[in-house]
Length: 291
Figure 1 (cartoon, helix red, strand yellow):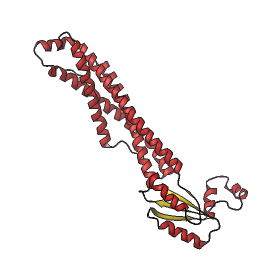
Figure 2: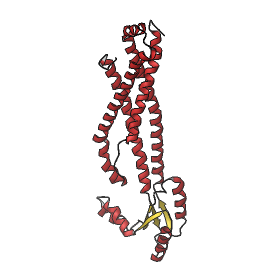
Figure 3: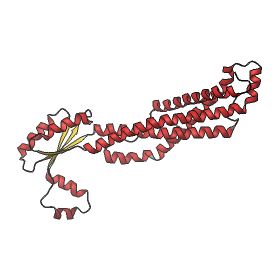
Figure 4: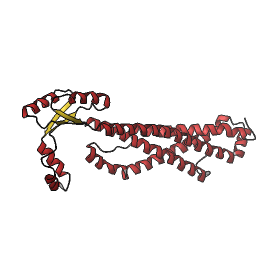
């Protein structure tokens, strides 16, 4: 029966190489899943700023507020006066006192900040909604971060494509590594295989230990890779959680879900099986007692 104790160095190199490949894929998958979740959470916390004309009376502002609250997509409406906007602006800069003397009178407009429902978090639903707001009388401008939303969404799509392509390439790499390792193992066990053939061992009986060895390499490589990815997450990536919460007001980063972890392990077992069977198909034919 074959074990990893035989040809230890060869198997150690194979498992380490597999784990590096799977670690890269797991980290890409970690970034993609958290980026998608971040995009969804930002959308669920979507805000729209409606800037008002300077010459509006209180009654006109109240009318606009009522019209905004009438939209089904609006959860809450918060009014920010010109004075409050100026106080908020100057508090963001240490040179606030100088700004107060440089800009007179107050150039900032009053505004309404709208908190939207989670259902209206993409361009197809948000765009028409913004157009309806801009047509309201007394509204000067509307801002909702369209460009950075679009850029962030595009970046997430690119990461998904890169992860898919990279995962396919890394999967082929795992198959190649397992296949070469099994092929070399077969060659080092040539005499044992010949003896087994002479005593009447079937082809499936001879192949079984090598296939199990390929499965074991894939399994150990996946476990080692996920351990490394988990260590990197809890020591580096999780430290970004507070920054994301403070910047975007969203929850912390999350590690890969259990279904994804199980899929990675199962996928690596499949790759180990494919690599070993491909290697055996060619290697056994080259032996003196070929089938």
